[in-house]
Every structure is written in structure tokens, then in C-alpha cells.
Length: 499
Image (cartoon, rainbow, N blue to C red):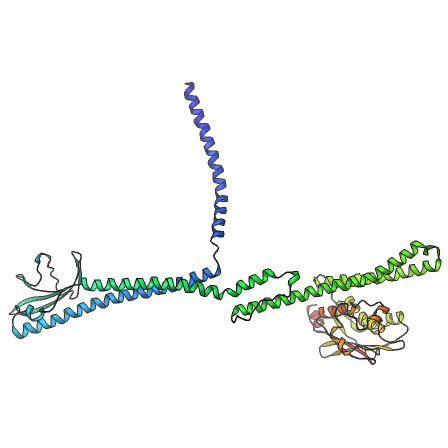
């Protein structure tokens, strides 16, 4: 009894263990299947050339298969119709002979003297078989005239029949012609075999030529891949060769080359930007370091040297602060993170405010306005003011003492026009296309004296551009410069409608 309980307990434990093992296996099966499918998918990752060849071969083979089946079936019907036509001809000859000679016994000699594979059988309704040219009468089949061209399979042979009903000596008789289709079936089998061989040969040729043709067509892609792998930061000048392509791949390569041109241009601009920024920061840092060293050595005991050093360090620090702020502004604008807060305000009031502030700051130039029309605009007031301050500051820097600067504001068609006109030194013609480039200076020595960084006009251009505006610069050396800023006022109209 104890042994029985032990065995039952052991069986239950075995069942529990088996159940746990099966549960664990079932838990891992999906992961195993997923990994297995990933391996299969990775192994079966065919090339584009293989896919193109496979697809076009499949299309060609399917088309060829349908054509071949059509030809084979058509040839089968052709042979069958030829056999039926032959039997029909013999039937007409036999009927004409019986009617002309009133004799059915000599039909065989009249018709079948040189005919093979055709059997003639004569039946009547009472006596049955009267005459036949078939040797084995046991295999004889009587086919009535309800199916004059029936095809019957009998004893591994195929027969086609033509039965004609005839009145002879007041007696209904049937002239039955039958033909063995073994010869036609041999022709049909040979034709089908030839078609099959041609199909196989065509598929082999298609696969061979198609594979080479697809590889040749996709060779530019291989060259593109090879070239792109060789492109790096140190080899941005490399471009894809498009001289041998005259299709969509040429367009793709040209698009890729254009993208590389833009990347290289952006990279060069970035390098130039970093280089210029480093150069701009290096000078004030060197000045500050020099004065700090002088103070550290002996200048702190000399009040005049101490004051000079403090003023110099303070001035250079302010220049650095302005430069860093401008760099941060441009960085935010490049990253589209510079925020714009548009509002409706009177532009004439802003112009008056700028003129008043400029007169307080600068007493060496004549700041005036000839026209300042009252009008409203929907824009970022602080940024518009900043851009106008940049243009006016440049006019002040490059206009001799006693010169005049005019700021006019008026409406022209659907645009607000703001003109800043000075009588300064002007801008050389060759420098005009580059004045809005970062760190660009027409007169570097003069800019150094005035503390310019070459970033102001870039910032002003970005601000006006974000308001869908335009900037036109007309300048003549020694005569002065006119900067015309145009800002569409349709934004103001849309704003009013929304309110």
C-alpha cells in the first residue's frame, strides 16, 4: 500500500515538473520563432538586381507560359479539325459513290486504296453491322449521327468518328468513318515538347541576360555607394560621377551632388564662423590679459596706470559681451529657437523714439526726418527697433562728424518703407554683395576703431526676413548710403480681421 502511494506521488510530481517544463518552453517559443524569422529574413535579403531579374523573369515566364499553352491547345484543335475534315471528305465521296452506282460493296476499293488509319463501317438498323474494314470486329464502336464528329477514347487509343445516314434500296444504312488519332497525337506531343524546350531555353537566356543587364543598369548605384563611403569631413569635395548616366539615376546623382554642395558650403561657413568668432574674441582677451599682467606686476601702485587698465578691461569686456550676445542671437536664429512676439503698434512713434534716443547718444551728426507717416504695423516691436538701430549705428560709424542721417517712413502700395539715408563714406561696389555676410567688413581698420564685429547687418537681415520684408542698399563712395527697408502691411490687415 505504501509503495502504491509512493508511485502515485512520484507520478504527480513528474506531471507537475513536465507541466512546468512545457510552460517554460511555450514561453520561449515566440522568442525563438521571432529570432528564427529574423535570421531567415536576413539571409534572404536579396539585392535589387536579383529582385529585378526575378520579377521580370516571372512576368516573361508567365506570359510565355500562357502563349505556349495557347499554341499547344490551338495546335491540338487544328489537328483534330484536320482529321474531321478528312473524314468529312471521305463521307461525301462515299455517299456520292453509293448514289451513283447503287452499290456499297466497292466503296472500300474506291476510297481506301491509298488511305491509312481510316476505318469504314456500314450498319443498318435491322441487321446491325453489314461491312467493316476493321480487322478486329470486337473493338468496333457504332456511333450514331447525333454526334457526327465525336471523339472517343477506347483501348488506349483515340478515335474520331463521322457517321452519315443514307437511304439505300429502301433501307436505312449508316456509313461510319473513324480515324485513329495516334499520328496526330504524336505530332501534338512533339510540338508540345519543342515548345517546352524553347521555353526552358528562353528562361535560361532571360535569366542570364537579365541578370547581366540589371547589374549593368544598377552599376551607377554601386559607384554611388563606393563614392559616398569615401566621403568624409576631410574629403567633402568628392562628387558622384554622372557622365555615364542618362536616366533617373543621373537625376538622383545630381540631387546628391547638390546636397553635398550645400553640406560643404554650410561646413565651410561654420568653420569660417568659428574662426572669425575666435579671432574676434582673441583680441579683447589678449588686451584684458595684458592689462591684468601689467596690474599684477607694478600697475596697481600707479593710479594712472590703474585707471587706464580698469577702463580698458571694462571696455573690452563690454565688447566681448556684445559679441557673445550677437553670436547667441545668430545661433538661436539658425536653430529656429529665436522667439518673435508680434503686436500692433504705430511705426511713426517708434521712428520718433529712435531719433530722440540717437540724438541723446550722438551729438556729432545731424539726425532728422523728412517724412514720417502715421501708420500701424503688426510686427515684433523690439526686433524691428533693434534692426533699425543696427542700420543707424552703421551710418553713424561710417559718416564723418557733422554729416547728416535721415530716417523716413512712408507707405508705398502695400508696403511700409523705412529709409535710412546718410552722407557717409559709402560702400565700394565690389563690397555691396557681401555686406550682410557674418564678420564681413568693408573697412577693417575703421571697423576696429569703431568696435564693429561685422555681425550687426546679418542680424538685421534676419529680423527683416522673419517679417517677410526686403532690404535694398544703394551706395556711392564718398557720397553716402541709402538703405530702404520694406515690410508688407498685409499682416496688419489680417491681424485686424482676426480681432
